[in-house]
Amino acid sequence: MGRSTTTKDAQALFHSLRSAYAATPTNLKIIDLYIVFAVITAVIQVVYRLWFFCC
Image 1 (tube, rainbow, N blue to C red):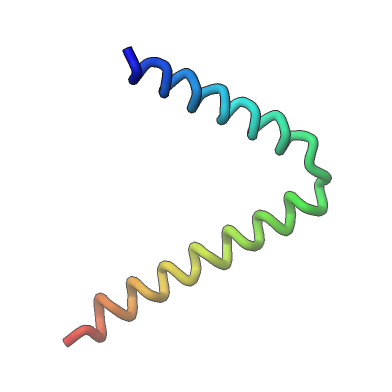
Image 2 (cartoon, rainbow, N blue to C red):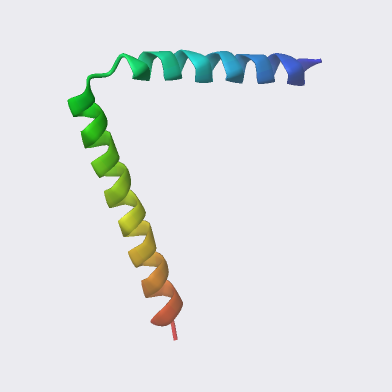
């Protein structure tokens, strides 16, 4: 019973965040994409470093 309430709350939160982000100006969305690209690149570099240079 509590789980379905949590799921509904999570869905309502996701919908609220999505609709708020839709109102974000395009310039900020471009900056967001760049930040996501930088974070993904950093994660790939860390995994590469740990995978090939660990031993």
